[in-house]
Length: 118
Image (tube, rainbow, N blue to C red; front, side, top):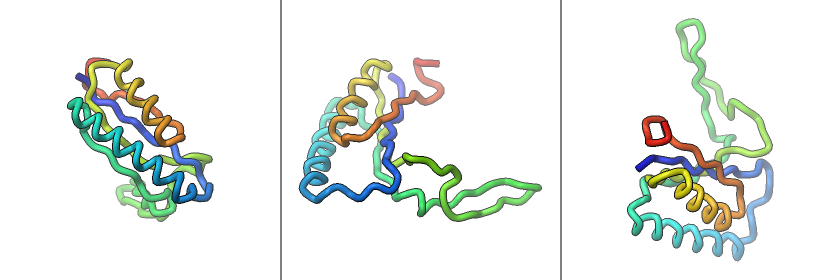
């Protein structure tokens, strides 16, 4: 089995969806998590606050500088993550497709080092 990261790519600056739409997304995500759990593939997952809440720690000249805000500006940001433990990339992509449909957002699928993909 290999650990994979499913990353939700959240659009920057868009208004939140209407409550009815969001309720449907949350229902689908709950079903998705239940299926991952019952299949034994669920490891961890959680949404993240927006990048404006980030604190960046940067080493410089033997010190660590602390600054508010995101390090990189972009059109999308990391909105949440799910870690799954599955047999191979094909299985991870199958879960990722379902995640993309449920969230209506881009999902990046990446293996962790140390798995069967190495």
